[in-house]
Amino acid sequence: MRLARFTHNDNFGYAVIESNQVKVLSGHPIGELQFTGEVLDLSDVRLLAPVIPSKIICIGKNYREHSLEMGTEPPSEPLFFFKPTTSIIGPEDFIRIPSQSNDVQHESELAIVISRLCKDVPLGRVSDVILGYTCANDVTARDLQFRDGQWARSKGFDTFCPLGPWIETELSNAQDTKIESRLNGAITQQASTSEMVHTIAELVSWVSHHMTLLPGDVILTGSPAGMSKMVSADVVEVEITGIGTLRNKVVAYE
Image (tube, rainbow, N blue to C red; front, side):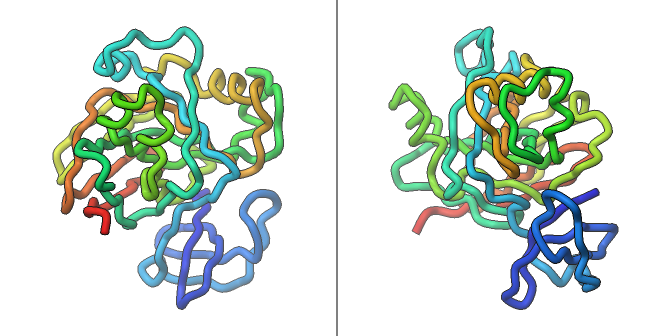
């Protein structure tokens, strides 16, 4: 099932996407689904980021080749940091290059969406707290990341967390699915989620042992190798098999 957030005629809502139909929900998609009976054409609505979480937890250096291209071995324990919710944008929204950076790069990632309040989740119970998965782009001002020595500023600019196009609740094998990014149509990243250093179950359990997770919280699971600089007028796409494609255009900040 594909859960989406959308706008139509200045109204906002949640829906289930089936084929090219948007079946409108009467409330939030987390929990029991209730439909209004209204059905729209997908071509008539604008999809938004599928969720606005209380927090975005990002896992760093979770693919070995990406860690090596950053100049380090993968960490023995999951390394996590945060993005502010103000960095979230949806499909087809603009990624804005801030004036403070001369090297903004994309990072394609599988994102986990949490289904319920949880803490100290055992490895064997992780599937019970996952609502589904979506595509993410951990946009990074790489020059600022290296300059600052910590990642808050380089990862936290407005528009630096594209999510979408929807939440897929029935991804058959999230731990072995293809992830790919394209810049102006050229493949820049291509890997399988099976190449993660720390698995999805390990990440959710690990994070939950350090903080309480709330319904709708998002965990970005790390980026494969292939960091690429983006400039104004570029188009970047993150495609994950079984979910779909997240597409964004890049513009200069004004």
